Amino acid sequence: MPSEAPHTLVLSPLGFVFSVVGTSRCDVRAAPSRRRSHITLEQLLEGRVGLVCSRTKRFGGAGACSGATRSHASAARSFVPPATTRAGTAQRAIPTIALNILFLAFCCAAFAADPPPHDAQLAAELHSRGWIVFSAQTPHGDWDLYLVRPDGSERRALTDTREFNEAGARFSPDGKRLLYYRMAKSDAVDNNTYGTFDLVLAESNGGNAVVYGRDFPWASWSSDGRQLACLTAKGIQIIDVASRQVVRTLARQGIVEQLVWSPDGKAFTGIANGLGAYWNIGRLADGGDKINAVSETERYNCTPDWCPDSRHILYSRGIIPKQDGRAQLWMARDDGAEKTMLYAESGRHIYGACASPNAKYLLFTRSVEDLGAAGKSQTTMAVVRWADTPMLGDENPALRQKFPNAKPARWLDLGPGWEPHWTDSEAPAGANAATVGTKR
Image 1: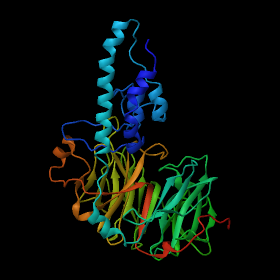
Image 2: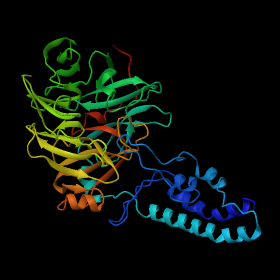
Image 3: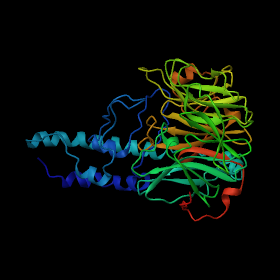
Image 4: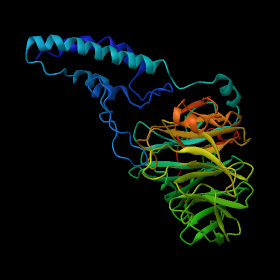
């Protein structure tokens, strides 16, 4: 068998490509005629310069690309050509190796030439429109809270707690306060459980944080910010923030998580059981007598949020079990009528949407892997103009056939982030120590 040195030498020109492109996931926006898979450069190398990849894991499906954590240097060293026990076989293998290397170089060049789209005009519109808070994983493996301008600039840490994860942050209606959940670093950050850990209330710049504890699950602000609605085992409890006392209790009517109080204070939405065979989006009037389905009931749906008009609800329209698909961003009237697709993409699950305070923009996350657990989902944030919807994030033939009038992709990438929330207040801009206090 030939020595590995010649192959290392042949691969060395790709070092420049690696240095420019890096080895992170590349967002490839495929042509309509090409079915795409989201793969890393490491996965190309791990597959011995091939595109061998098992089924992408979607909505709990088995199979995923393996070997994605190996560095490109070690992967290059591990490159082994086909068995060459005789000189003639080795000579015949060299053209194949060369072709594979050229193919890899072509892929790298294609990835580098097709970054996520940047809309300078949209960015200029967004820069001064408040702040977005979100969770993101740090190099130390924990999840902290961050602030960023809606155009993706001025990104900075809001918390810095190596021993904890922080998640599920939401600004108060006036943007002056913040609620979020804190959990041990060993606890997974998950869409379906983050609201069951320790509630923390703080100023919106992260200062004066107070730990309320675990008695306030799935908290949501009232319209005046003086009360919280919490989804407890006893029902939906309305809590006075100052005294932490229960003011009143409403029947849950099947709502199990992700509770959100409407901006006008007259209704709740959340994920509910009992409206169909799967999780669905329910709307409960403040009286608590009856719940109605907002989403379609023959599929999974999640991550609801109210639009500023308190009459429409954003949600992620999920999949039908045992069928392929990706979660899409939809909106419906609070009585379940007028269901409308707002954003769909063949290569991403769309979750965690919220409207800008002026209702002119939509903020959401794009995940390669399906959520619950956020750790390996490769989740990034994006903003679109509401006027540009319905929108397709990529030109997928099946989606185009289903939504022929959808507009082409025009979105702003905000980088890695999970469960974002938006305020138009400048209060978060105040200085903070990037720490969480220990007050209780």
